[in-house]
Length: 416
Image 1 (tube, rainbow, N blue to C red):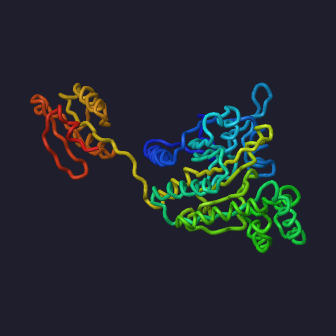
Image 2 (cartoon, helix red, strand yellow; image 1 turned 90 degrees about the horizontal axis):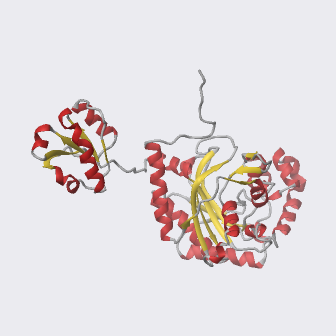
Image 3 (cartoon, rainbow, N blue to C red; image 1 turned 180 degrees about the vertical axis):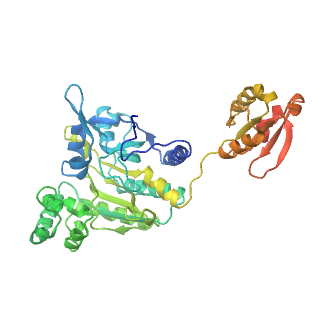
């Protein structure tokens, strides 16, 4: 017998697990509306050049983690490993600057990375992201940070650490890279094999390394802030000033660069100890030069962030902090009244009452078990004698209270 299972690092979401995802996604949609963000949907796959040029060939994502394949015409395509590059491409291709001076966009969708599956990290994963394109103000950086913090608070996640840093711009990054080479050069042999390659290729990625030996080797390297230009310094100082003014606590982490080459000026990350070793729950930053890659060199200021939904789900499950929508009513019928079930349910649904039925006449006890299993708020019992009088019984499944009501008044007696 052929046994087919889902690919490693993927998940099936159904019933309760699917409801939990929907609960999270719906709350996020409601929150981003308060900030004026509209949804964008981009393809699940793009031409590979979008990611190699946009994310950076020296990154782990491009070098190790992309799912890449050729179409029938021999063109290289890649399942999207993140959302920002696709949004940047869509912004340019659709001339979105003609829609609004500032485009505030959010996305919810699946991403794909060929990395080692572990707790809260998968090869196919759901991601929530926001992108604000067209404004260079550090106030926008602060707003996006606050949006993300507020999303976490809405889910009851209050114990978080906000880390921020400046990673300079195209004008000042080279001087910092040179300072890093000089500081690390004599200790290069103490780095892991991967970081020794990074030293020659993309030295900033060394700051991303999780190897404890590498962390110890570079613990006293120069700070980015001391090498950035006046414009980047002013931007970062204003961001810190604004976060302080509104009472948002933060820590300046001079090692924070994030894992994507397109970041400029602001980089940030939010961590929680509820995830153990995998402490980052979201991150983001400014990418003022990314859009120019696809826009004939014409840069457009932008800032964004991304949050892994499965990682958020993991935190919520650890904290038992998930509320899913319940079925409003479950119909319990006798053999003599089963033919009336569909008519009753149609009436309830016309009044925005969610309801269901087993569609098989079982014992009353079995039907009440089904009502409990479906987490129904109420059971509507269609007894033969009551139904002949135009009545039914309505049972509150939480309190156990039961009363007889008119068939026509069921919807008015069910509290949403």
